[in-house]
Length: 117
Image (cartoon, rainbow, N blue to C red):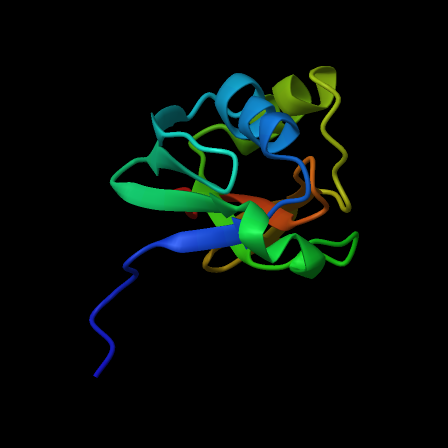
């Protein structure tokens, strides 16, 4: 039986560019760094950047990582100011709101805000 997420990794073509995006744009802390594999801390979840699988990176994306947000509109605006390309508007549902965007390698990411209580 699945017991939760162990880690998430995404294929990257250029490690320096990918680290710059996750560290400098999204503000995540780098746990370890090498040309082939780097890890970042994301609120208790380890995100791996895997240059060994660069052929899996494409504009269509690889994995999807969802980042928790308490102010989805504000964070979307902030990220757009840093050059992040959102692929859609904020969409709201009964279970919360999401805003899809791409990282520097073309992988699919989302901001997620829980429903207002």
